[in-house]
Length: 326
Image 1: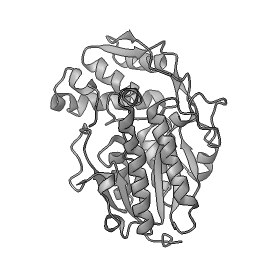
Image 2: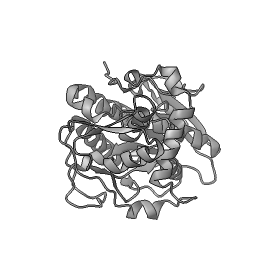
Image 3: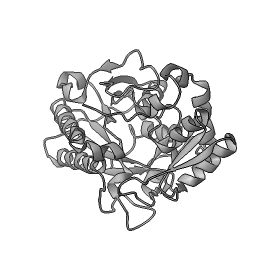
Image 4: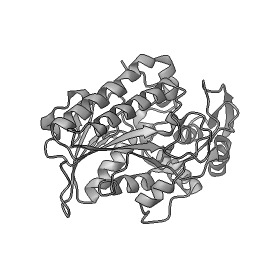
């Protein structure tokens, strides 16, 4: 099996490099002295202009030549909207097909390591909280089902004797921070507070999520290039907060903001909370984790000061419009 040479800064490829996590990760890997290739088909317009070195290409267009000499691939590219997956479920087959193609390409090119981005959504309504990596997979949306399928493809290639590629599935728990699109709760609240002053709460608002600030997540992702290979690892904070708690933080920062209630999502899950035992054994945070209030404040400041509202044409409608693909 090919290995990353000790002492050598790895060469890395990031799919979905123009996305929220991909953009932050690419910058962090380069700051760590690594050579980074970033690809994205830009089917969803990023909030910030893409990195000038980004290659516009879909995952299914990649060839063994594109990954030749690459030590680590971070596969972040994905259709990711839970609500839209109920509207266009067949579109989410692309998550599976792209992953299968990428794994074939990496196997052909003998890439030593592939890191597959997955999600806590694969656990569904977990029987145990916090939820460990060995918990049963019980997806409740087409999006979550597509992520389970991606994981199964990755596992199949990992178990092939002739693959030569170590594969780790990374299950993210509600990563947030500057640059995330407002179809997620925290950036959605930030956008609402700064435009029409409304914070759109779906359902009761008592649903709880395990929020992790982007800087903390990226720090751990960078460490994965040298961490011991494991089949699956959660990346979360280990604690949860309700949507109403997030709304309260935003209202402290923007007192004129008000809550607007809308209907609940289909198959809403009451709580996600990560068991971070394995995470702690693999990684060490170089600084204390960013607290939820501080992280929300940083995110709100980015929305206020980055110029994204002016570039995309406020009011909020153009940014909140569903990102339908195909």
